[in-house]
Amino acid sequence: MDKRKDPKGSNQLNQFDYIPETAESQLLEIFNKVKNPLDRETLSVITQMSDRAVRNAIRRMREKGIPIIASPAGGYYLAHEDSEVQKLIADYYSRAHSMMRTAKALQHNYEMKGQMKI
Image (cartoon, one colour):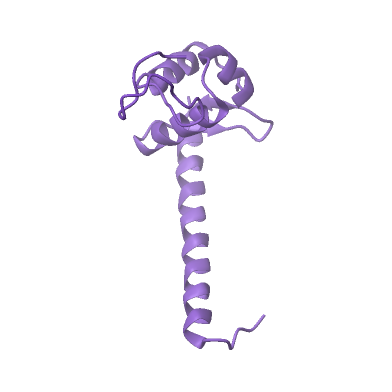
């Protein structure tokens, strides 16, 4: 684990909360070298990061527009085909749409104040 001090000045870093500045670059380098999907456990071993750190780094990479695909068979890989990127984008729009429907239903039932219906 990186021995840099955390922002509070302590030398002890919580391995579940600390994410090295280079986490994304480490993962990107791995994804560029390996064409098969790698599961989080393998990525954690290779990078010596916690599972949470790997998940957070993948999330940040996606937020930066890097198309990291979660394989249905398990594992992650960098998209190599336009069709993979387009499917990933469609999946995110679908999730966002589903979340908006849920938020609207919650808002509606909240406004009904005790008159929830199933």
